Amino acid sequence: MNRRAILTGFSALLTCASHAAAEEFTIVLTGDTGFSRNHSPVHPKGVLKYGKRPPFRAALSGVAGDINGDLNFTNIETVVTDRNGLKRDFKGQRGPFNFRTHPNGITALTDAGFNVFSLANNHAMDYGPAGLRETLKHISTVPKSKLLAAAGLGLNSSEAGKPHVMNVRGADVAFSALGIVTNNLGRHRAGKNKPGQMAYRFDDDFRDVLARLTATPADYRMLSVHYGVEGQVRTDRRQVKDWRKIAVLDKGVDLVIGHHAHVVRAVERAGDSVIFYGLGNFIHHGTANMTAKGICKDYGLMARVHLKRQADGKLAARAVEVMPVTNTHIAVKRLPAAKARQRVHALNHLARKLPKGGDGVEGMRFTPQSDGRGLYCFKGAAEDGGKIGKLCSGWTPAPSIPANIRGRIASSCRS
Image (tube, rainbow, N blue to C red; front, side):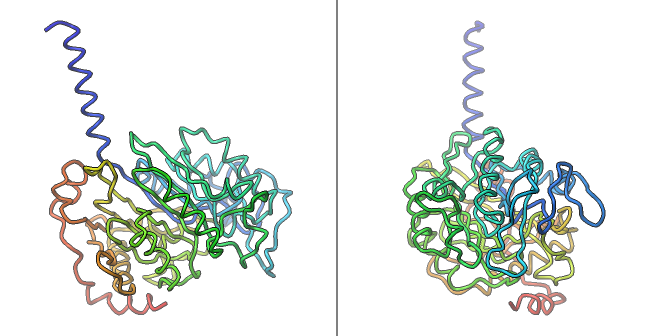
C-alpha cells in the first residue's frame, strides 16, 4: 500500500472515530454559586470566612473530577466586580443580602471547566445598573473557548432574553435563562431600553424567553429558571404547572434547570425531557451552613445528564446521574458514599410526592450506587452502546427506601 493510501485510510478512521464520539454528550448541572458573603469587600485572592482566605480554586477542589461534561452549568448568584465602592440596592428590604464576587472567582470556575452560566436571579441587581454593567463587562472578558454562554442579563430585554446557541462537537444546543427579581421590582427587569434581567414572575418575560428559545433551531434546548420558596423541598403549583407545560405539552424544552430554594427538590421525567425542580446550593459563601438541617435539606446536588443522538439528528436524554454534595457554604465536596446514598433515597421520596402528571410524566427515582451516586436509565439505555450502554449495563430500578431511614426522611421532607 502506498503512502497516500495509508494516509487516506488513517484520515477516514479519524473521521469515523470523531463521528462516533459525537453521538454521546454529557451535561453537568450545579445550583447556586457565588464567592461572596453579604456585602463583604471583594478581594482578588479569595473570600474571608472563619478568619481564613483560601484561594478561589480551593472551594472547588473537592469536586474537580466531577466537572467533566461537554457542557458544565452553574447559576452565578452574585454581581461580578472588582470594585468595593458600588452602591448597594436595598431592594425594598430592611436587611437585604447583597452579593458581589471578584472576577478571579469567575476565572476559577471557568478554569475548573464551567462553561455555561445563568446570570438571571434575585441577586443579579444587588448593586443596581452599575453592578449589572460590571457583571457584563467582566463576563465578556472570559475567552469564548472557556465560556460558551452566559444568559438572562443584559443592557435591554432583547439582550437579556436572547437564546445562546452553543455548538458542541457538531451538535447545536440552545440555552436561555430567567429568574425571579426581589419583591417583583420592576426596576430590576430588563426593558426595551433599560438594563436588567428577564423576570420569571412577569408573564410577558416568561412568554418572551420561552418563545424565543423554542423558535431557535437546535438539537437540544435548555432553560434555567431561578425560582422557589427558600428552604422548602416541596414543589409548588406554579412551578409544576409551568415547567411541565413547556416540557410536555409544548415539547419545546428538553432540560429545565431549577434553583433558588437553597435545598434540593425532586427530579422529574416528562416524556423525553428532564426537569430539575431544585438543585440547591453548589458553592456559595453567603449561604448558611446546611449540614445540620436534616437528611432532606442538608445537601446540594450535582447531576450529569447523558444524551445520545437519535435517528432524526436530535439529542435525547438516556441516563441521569445525581451526586449529593456537602460543605456548600465554604468548600464543596461529595458526601461520603453511605450518607450520599441516604440523600438519594430522600430525593426519591420527594419524587413520589410530586403531583400526578399525564402519560410519560413521572418522578425520577434513582438507584443508589456503591460510590454514593444515584442512577436513572431510560428504557433501552443499556443497549445504546458506548458510555451510556456501559453506565446502564445491569441497572435496575430504584429499591424501596430502607426502613431504618424511612421515618427520618419523611419527617425532614415534610415541607
